[in-house]
Image 1 (tube, rainbow, N blue to C red):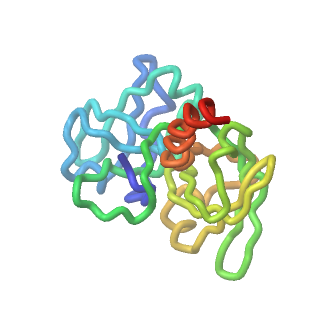
Image 2 (cartoon, rainbow, N blue to C red):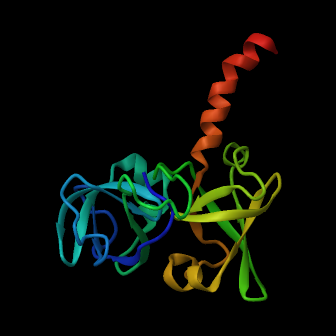
Length: 200
């Protein structure tokens, strides 16, 4: 489980995912006390560490993950958002993020507004059903508050700090971003499903 508070901006060491399905990431903060088998979110995608040093880590990426996330398009030197799995007792500064990406969205527009940048992201309908105004969404692993939502996408407002310390500062129109909706909404829908079927 993660919080959506990015700890570090790492970078891809290898030229994409290698023939063995492994991805090497250069990092410092998230590997300080990491062990083989631990989880680290890379652009919001939960990966299992198979080796680690003071300078980075290597994780397995199965073909399904490469297809369903933006990890399959990574190239050597690309920056990535990193967050180590939270520990019991840690502060929940963002929201509950599982690291299981729902879909890839597309940055449609970036509009400066005062000290912020409003970003519009187009997303599939099966993702948007869980996105609500003033609710939470993880975009490339960043916990963000939804400003508005419509049938084709949603907007979020980014503060200067987020732009400076995450990959959001490099987003452009057309950028592919990993999306994970609020897990609570999914459980609520699942729980209400049988109830609605019996009484509806």
